[in-house]
Image 1 (cartoon, rainbow, N blue to C red):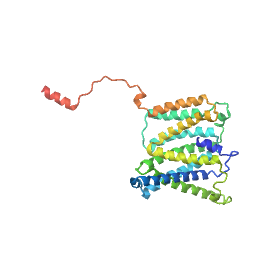
Image 2: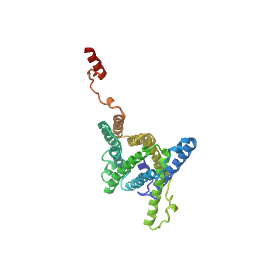
Image 3: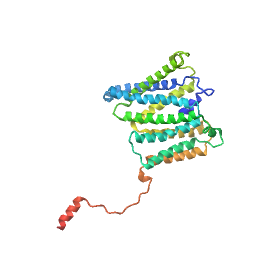
Image 4: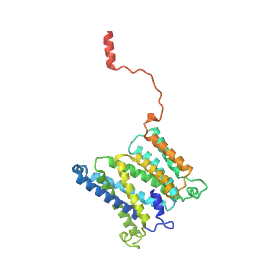
Length: 323
């Protein structure tokens, strides 16, 4: 289930009974523990794993930047959902598809063909179409009536998500270090930054609610824990994609997972499918084919009957024979 839906379900009376700054912290700790266990297992089962661990501080400190970006992004997500509803949040979230493509080209210098740019645009259109309900409904009206703060935070969230993903991919692929060692560095800094955020909140509130660790689980429900686990699990899966695939694959995976969730909701939650949903699925499938299919399967190239040019060796042999 998408993060936005779970986060909205965890609200009560339009707000959070728990301190939402604790959710990213617990998610970082969860990812840190899982990565540490996998690294320990890898080092025990593979003697060469130790050689894939770079302990140079110049390399380690680079993980400070994405950790800080993810900290800001996770908190911006919660702040955005206090101004807009889930439908509006998901629609604005599609902006990260386009921003990821732009940063993918600018920062990673990965050239995309015109067909691939068109495919990315179609993916954004398709996912947005699938989420827009019929006009005249409350959900459609809310898209245009949210406070300006909600739209600005939504745009900021999309930009931060793309920037964090692009920089993380750069770090993951810059050397042959173990994925779990790289995750351990990333999530260690992430946990530290989240602790700093919680301490800063304590000082800002004058410790009127006590120290952050004394109230860390206050107001938590089953849904809140699902938010933590979903956020943590998604982060681990994304790190795998950053290491062995790229950000565009991540964008497509996220979009397709969202569409599958909507289709599954038809059977699980009696969700009524709309024409927009089916149109969105068709557009996304077209986009998927356009981006990953070989160009010659998309465009019919004219067949030329030109004779093969002679090689230099053939020309020299013929000249020698004539003479």
